Image 1 (cartoon, helix red, strand yellow):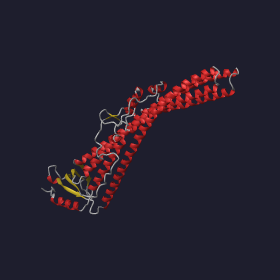
Image 2 (cartoon, helix red, strand yellow):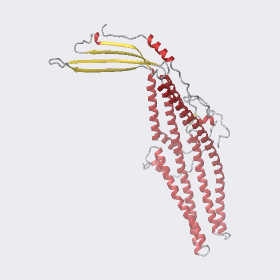
Image 3 (cartoon, rainbow, N blue to C red):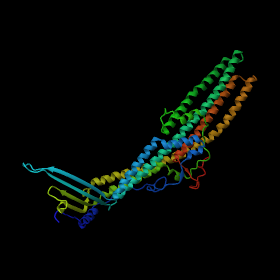
Image 4 (tube, rainbow, N blue to C red):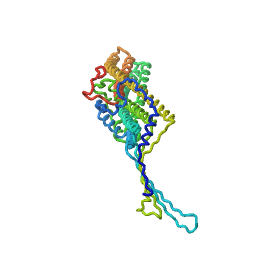
Length: 479
């Protein structure tokens, strides 16, 4: 049939591929270094069972509601979710590389010869094409693997943002409650000092106190008053941070945020133990480590894709085309044609650029491995430091509780001895200063112990072990 062609001889292309493949030697991929925490780089798809709602252990419904609201409305989390969806869409596009692709085109031209009296001719041509790449050397599968590791990295990045949002929300809430408690302690002590100053003024007027006692009492009272604005500023800044974390503007007249400031509740403290289990096991659940693992997997896959460029790319093409003008009829076979057959493309025989790309991919893979090792080491350091700081702060808090109780008894004794004329008012002032310091340090320690508990959960990846999932290390199960 005139105008019809077909190409379907594979013997020559296959022979050419065999010859070209024999000309390329594949460089070895980077060695996977020994890591501080064992495991396969490509094991990120394994999800380990854990509980992420650690903030419920503080026994504060307001804190739980705030964290839940932040995790549903935080803008950084929305950004991370969008990045994850973009990575998933890219992975879907990469997986389509296993399938065929199609294309269509149509063109039309209108023209006539330059001689006078010629008619205007219309010609239309169109075509349909399909192609499929034969993944003989693993390039397509490597690109798909790289895209899927991108998805895992984006997923872990989102989880890392969630850990940060939850811990920052809890930390700012605890800071606000701590500032409110310390503000109340300062106001109560200021009231006591004001009453003492008034009494001392009366005694001075009656000649029973000295000007030195009066000036000392005035200085201590004013110093206590000077601490109030600092706590009030902390309360407001914490409220503003909570507004941003929950997706609201700082000047948003939200009733729930206003109630946080107007309602004074006690500092929430962690209840029970922080179950860590094996540090080497739990640290691997940190999202930044999981993201670093995914990055290694992605880079190794890209290295395999670069190595595949040493070999030819084989594509099977099929085309159907048609051409019509004023002299053609639709049924005229001379207007149609088709073609089918493989095509081969190769970067060789000069493969220097390909080998340079492989060297770049290998260097980036080695950097990713080094970054992973450093991330693990940093994580271990953070976990050890966070748990040690938390344990030591709990011991400090216990001693400060005893010190505050002793200071309360001391001020009662100092007032009694002053009223009986056994001591001067300097002893009362000293007892008041000691009580203020002890109560403020106790409130600060309670605040610090809660903040350190939050920091410990953050260092542990924002998770806690579920019962029975791991054998806990007795030294790491902190009360």
